[in-house]
Image (cartoon, rainbow, N blue to C red):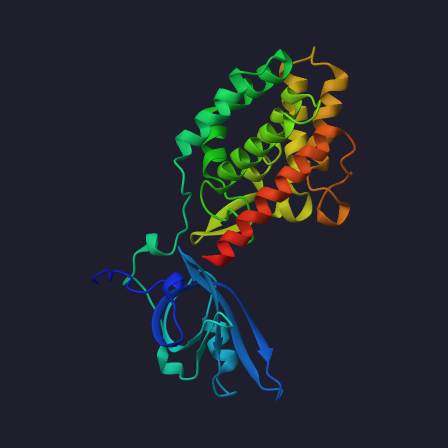
Length: 298
């Protein structure tokens, strides 16, 4: 079967009738103001996301819903509204499932920056650290080639921000650079802050995977969370390889790991209390929220 080049992308959608191929990210059945069911799909391609609403005969809603799975590529024809950022489809014949007549790269968001360049920035920061305990810890972590490859490939989230291969690496460097800018204004422990920035999301290498090219979370993320897993990983490495690692420094680093989400309701077991932990939390929040807004704007 001939693979068709994608002619239309989310970022180019205009008011009016359109035909487009999109990937299903999420689905639900909702009701309109007349209590009639319709299908709402969150869909997208490598340029952004949009909402698709299927207004079909009530007798077909459940069947269409059951046959529409996350990761499917669908070709649809309908009316697009820029105001509501949504595509409305009223005819079931205007929705067809694509099998091989599409290019996967058209639907797979990618890191805009070269992963190798981002890793170079991280390794350059590590080599410049003055605290040998933190420096040795980081070097030991990134000397593990398998881990480094996982770190470079992991997404940072399912949908909110940096939700693509290399996204967590890009986010990590974004947080690191913000911390570098912040540290110049305050008397913080720069080595500790930079180490926390580099390591704060390493748990995502174990808790985020790709399923049919879509980021998804593992059972570990659901039941334990990357925050705890990352802290445990560092604890185990220090215990195994660095028995002389200062107890207070280990506690300070653990506090950064466990508090970087800021609040219990946001996934932090503890709230940030030290200057370095506060700086890390707000750098993490700023990078994620700005990227979220940029991706929504795309």
